[in-house]
Image 1 (cartoon, rainbow, N blue to C red):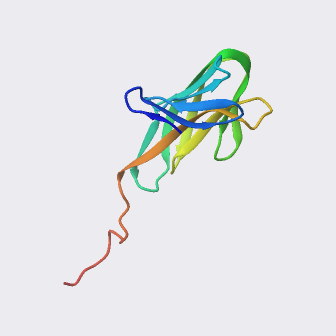
Image 2: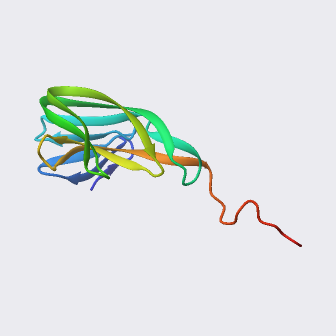
Image 3: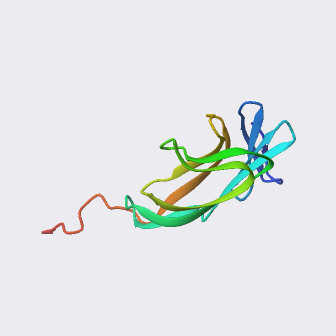
Length: 141
């Protein structure tokens, strides 16, 4: 694991002869055999709900790009559910209606494999945290 403060890159791990790095914008890239790079981003990368625990609703656009063509699928990693697949493509876009009360991870995989080529997270934030006591509580003193 390496960290470069000036270059804004962080080496996260090695997966099947691939090194996954994260850049300053939160996008993660995969470098395979020094010739292939795959990058996955989303816009926006954060969903804001009014109160903690509420479901956050957001239209999200995923964009990915690779230096080689292939059969790739965008997967909701928390449910291991494919959202969209592309055949012999080097890039793709997918519009998604995000609905969740907690942060979720999404990955790009080659079709019919379980190897994550790129990963991206959509974080959920709240304007107000939930209080532990009910708002309609009565106080005598």
